[in-house]
Length: 268
Image 1 (cartoon, rainbow, N blue to C red):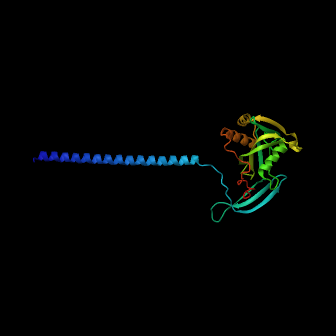
Image 2: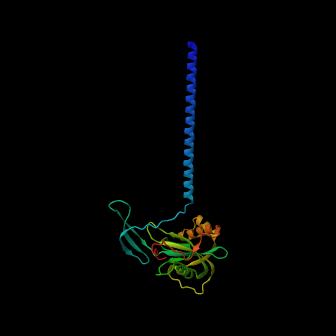
Image 3: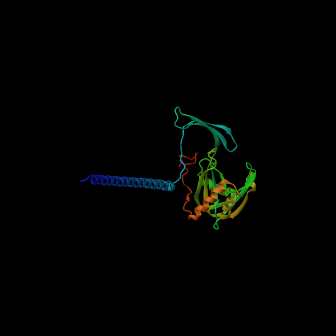
């Protein structure tokens, strides 16, 4: 074989090897890209599944007991006391303590009384702390020792509005001001309404209570327009409107346990 032929063969072999190497490198890059795409897709799918699970998880407050070193009433009021607690918090060593003062509240119940025309029974009375006569729903303190919450609600509806109800359901539970009070409030939906057989004598601010029947949708509109501002009323009518749209499926039994009420834990 002549030298030119040898040189040509060498060049052809080199070109073939370069082409093979280039194809192998391309294949390797394609495999790498495919693996990266697969990993990215798997990660995306995992993240989407996690997000979907989080979206469908039920949100719930969690009772979280702590060790209370000391607890004392620092001011005894006419209705409520101010309490000071020193409690352990966190995982630091040595254990750190926090001091907090708060309104020590009995808790309260409220009643959204709804008639057959979907009208809400509202009352208006003077509230000195805000210097206003505001629209509310019947409500009152759980200040009778041992009284079941639903019985307290029935008592308040009769005493404040001279109304009784044949059907009771749990509508909502909430805390009014958890940053500075342990007040827990339970709202009931009362239906099957009728006048009570007794007219209660009212005193002080309650002596001038004004009653009015207002369509539920109209009360909701007033809440959204910010022309009424009572928190219990707002939560009650907004919850009722949503529950009604869902066929009242969210309602609970009137005698449902109330484990999140600080004063009732362990009693149910």
